[in-house]
Length: 525
Image (cartoon, rainbow, N blue to C red; front, top):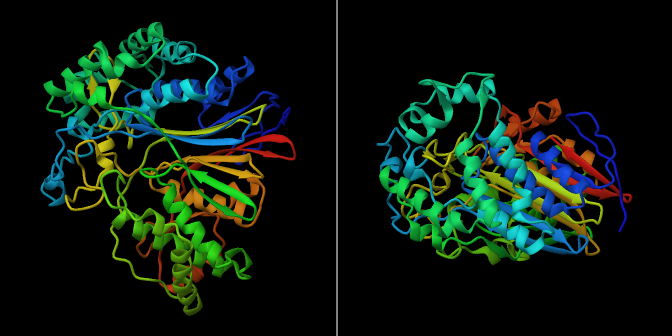
């Protein structure tokens, strides 16, 4: 299927036409990915090369040792949709009460977020290898070369990253991080050239074998395990050997002759679909008032967030009512409750505590044959656990921070468990053909940002450009609602009158591609 390409960016100038397709999400990744497309690679080749490169070029947001990926791809010219789970896994020695001191407010150091206990088995390399093996046309050895070049030659250290390293003693106290992020005993200054020669050497070793196998079941795995043991972490060589990324069946729903597909738990898409099904049951797009539409969206999302933060966890270990939450019956019951509060101009009280979660890079790709891919990869918050495997240049993500610290919660830590995360890569199809792909970065804000774009693109059948530019809100289930600056003043005032605690705040950043009128489009906001 030959397709011509244009691009539309809401926060940047349009790109030159590219007949090969697009990769969008981060400048270095985009350049690497589009070069792969120009050389004949498909969307999966391009997004994997881009992900490997950005894992070196954006060490605060993600990394080769980042905690995980979540991906969804449309292959066979966009006709077959498959999801990949590359989430982190808790070590076998993990107990449900490992972070009890954090839960009781007795640990100001936050050992679940910073340090060696915060890191589980890294899933990024396994997930990328699985994508290549199943859907790529090029080899790992070929696709990792741009990442090796970036690690070898380096780049000027950004001022914001210099400030993060300077502001946290964890970096200075950890031998591997001190070696990587310091020069002559001082944190790297803005503008100094940052290189990661140890990481380049490790990636060359993997490239020579054309596989990430040694990272999980070889000499490299043993070196990682030894550093965990030396520094009081829990990950062992057996944990690394037991890890597998998985091909998983996407969750799916239809609305307005379109099909929305997103990875299942432990990814964040179930919360998006639950909200959408409630709005669909309300006939949301037929509500005449823009203010009532916003009110209904907020309440549908608040309800889904309440379920998310009280009921969800790894379904392999917890009894999670997935079928009930996504059933038409539940959507209709929820819709009836929300109709009542919208009519009364009130809201449903949920005693939910919020929690900041940031970080992440999300890439979206489309090629000339209509294949699409969305891949989100993350450390968690800035630099993840902030500790580094010495001699490998491998800063570790803090996937364990995504567990709930309460031992009796469905998302509590446990041996072999995968934590709930916020990544929501999503593909929308019409008549069996993928026509839009979207993902985001921004921690918990990703979920509502993707929700807003889908309500516009699918619920109202707007173009990608219009959908991604729509004003967004953020909620995590309580009465605090964050609205973007672009929200209409009358809508903002109406939400205040309802009783919400309104705060102005930026949304997540979404990266999306679409096929519209036989042309390829890419947008990022």
